[in-house]
Length: 269
Image 1: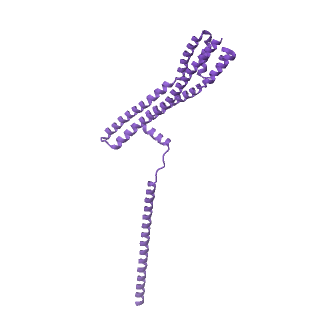
Image 2 (image 1 turned 135 degrees about the vertical axis):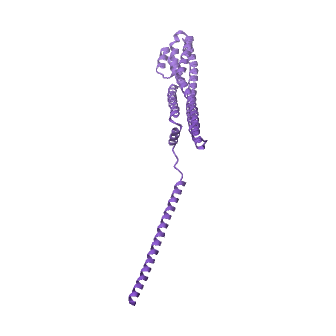
């Protein structure tokens, strides 16, 4: 009986010891799991901080322009964009036309003088017909009136010179119109945007800085875009005007020299 009781006592001690060991193991495992979870949370926080601290990739000019265009509203922004497209189209057409109209007037004058010396008026007319540019056209009109006298030659040159000047200036007034319209449309969009901003303030019932700032920002975008369009077209306009002035001055100088050549030829006859 004593041995049986002793056996039960030893068995109870063994079971108690095993239970303590398992309890310690579970505690250790729980602490390990908690430590692992905390470590993962800390790593996640550090990664989030690193991502937040990293600077965003800079946006391209096209992306920024697209965003601002959408913010300004497709209504007025689209109209201002059309003024830019039409203005640039006319400007490019004028630049090409004026570039083709630019010729070496000294070479033309030498050709006329040589033709008059070798073949007379008829030879000079043939040379002018084969020469491009407004100067050659003016000289052709003068040669056609040579038989009527030098007075008629001068009148023909002056009259046709005015016609050529009008052709050179054709379309320039439209560029000037678009330069004036673009900022006006921008200002109109700004006024409408300001009205909308005040409507938002009235609807909110409070002057919120966010509402006011967003409304004003959107309103001013149209003005900025309109001014940019006007500046671009103004540069093209000034270039075209200077080109026309140079051509007109060149035509006037060459016409005077041409009349002198014809007067000298008339005296020799």
